[in-house]
Length: 135
Image (tube, rainbow, N blue to C red; front, top):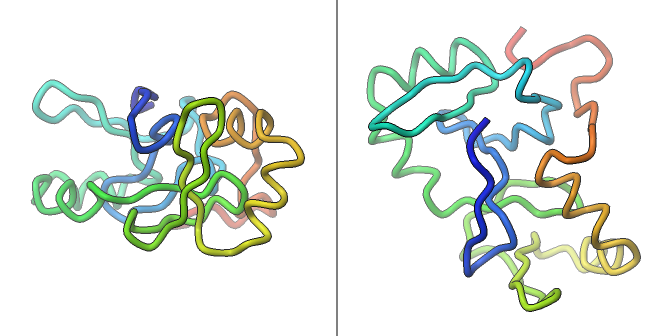
């Protein structure tokens, strides 16, 4: 899985499929079922083989497209950073989709949402009913 690192513009970078731009956490993709590729000495995780194969053809194009994506810790929506709102939490700037409800929910249990965003908490994902991503 892509390393989670502190960044000045968010607490951590949650894994995002470089090809489709989907949050792997939102999809329920874990280190165990992600498709991994190395490119320029960095490991990337993908939601499916199809995305990994597309990435192999034009990796720089896809990396450019997702470079400014962040994931809302509450609803797990993927957004370009310029379409987000920020909130300070323990000295970190946390980015949210523009929905006021997401910030309200986050404030009730921020550590849960940050742990879920980073993959520390198991989340079965939006495809939990057996209809997996790209299947």
